[in-house]
Image (cartoon, rainbow, N blue to C red; front, side, top):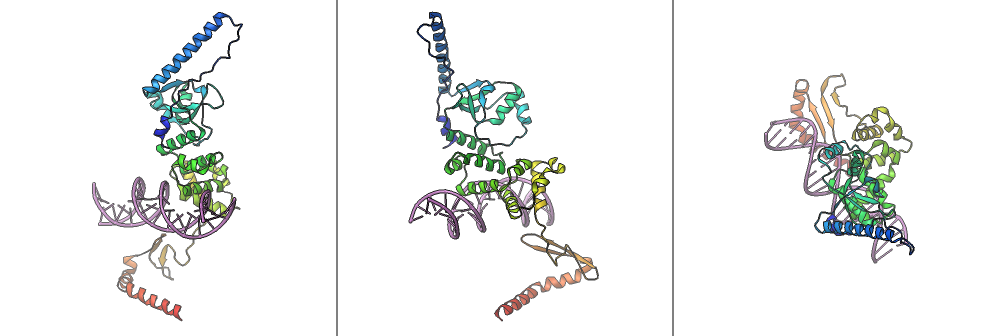
Length: 321
DNA sequence: GGTATCCGGCGGTACATACT
DNA sequence: AGTATGTACCGCCGGATACC
């Protein structure tokens, strides 16, 4: 379901706290008062309905009445930018809430959690659009907003998926997050393979994607004796950005790749430096110093193809023997 | 047999860096 | 400045496997 469709699921929240039914022996004045309240309530509901019909269904709410979604998506982060933006220009975009399913008169956020936090800190009233949403619609709205903002990191998305998994079938989660079942499966396996306290210690790590987290999960799984938590707790690491902390941690626990017989500096047995060797995943680069090995380099350049073919012929001969 | 899940690989894209 | 190259992220696809 698209968010556009969700926004069409309009139902006015006219469900303001209703006074208990009046008993027969109430004084006429009290009845009149109740009727006035009822009339006022109706007028408010009418006003909301009119604004909804006009597409202006943005209502100011007391932030004390608004609670976060039952599924947390984002790790605590700084909202300084949002604070100054709202302080200077006011709240430009309303949040989406639904009537709280258990607390009459209260609301639950579908999206706009950071905006709500900022507005709470500023002590303002929050502008909100109210919709009656089922639990599924709420998390779909929340997930789709996250996707549209594209600022949730991979691990935040994975944890969001993990929390959704506690109460929704996979198809709801894939729909909410606009991901396929394979991607969901990977997200869950990553987030379940890495201890929660380690993820907390690393933080959201923006820019660190599936493969890197998968690599960390694999390393932890492979060598359970290693306790990367100790590393993540190092003061030095805690002063880094979350992203650098992740990289430092991964580097620290990744086994060193030793390539025997191929030193970085290429030198003869007597110590004469000829050049250097650079290794990467896809290639080996041998750089020869013109001054020290110019003649050898020319020879190699001329005869490289012949040497390759000779070598190949030998190895084929060996295989056939 | 059907469904759910996992896994490896592919192609598109974005970005950084080196080179010309 | 423009181009080439390497690296990483991401969504998707399809095969393999497990489970009912």
